[in-house]
Amino acid sequence: MKKSFLLVALAGLLMTQSCAGQQKPFGRVLGDIVKATTTKGGLSNDDIVAGLKEALQVGINKGADSASKVDGYFKNNLIKILFPPEAQRVETALRKIGMGAEVDKFVLALNRGAEDAAKEAKPIFINAIFSMTFTDALSILKGEKNAATNYLKRTTTEQLITAFSPVMEKALQKTQATKYYTDLATTYNKLPFTQKVNPDLKQYATQKAIDGLFVLVEQEEARIRENPLARTSDILKRVFGSI
Figure (cartoon, one colour):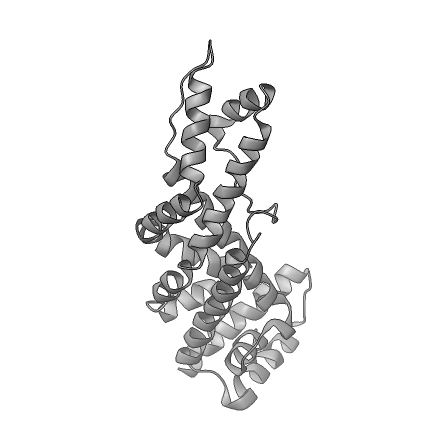
């Protein structure tokens, strides 16, 4: 147990030095490892896994809460959902014929749908992290500053799409985004010399909503790694403080 934690501590310390562009003498590195393993009795493998799971949960909670509030998507340019790329010519054409207000109404409804659906995303994300192993935790500690978020993407995206899709469909109907888009597409398809469009709005909106949540979770992960004040519990302070 102690040997495995020494390896984790060494990897974490080397990663921290590398990222900061610093090179400590090897004697100081060893001193830091000893300090990390003796502080509060050291950390077990279970402590490390628990700390990383909690870090993910903190990021998920804050990210989902931020996304699900009014204007969480609409007024955040990092995650705002715009017209589907394959239908942007629809937006351009309709604005030219004086339907800009209707287009804006659709974009607002699309983002309101994502905000509404994000309320249901939190338990889906949280349930997905319970299977994290010590090997996963070690990989995350040795990885980049967004390694935990990438782990979450890799292990949950497919099931999130499956679970999130009906939630997003219901939200799009509730905000009338589907109706607005159908009306816009119908109007566009009646214009002369245009190529008809019928993109899958639900699939597009679902993927963009999930992408936006990952952006926010990644921001929270970075805060926890870099800012001691963002470590809101003892286990987070012990795990991330030790590296």
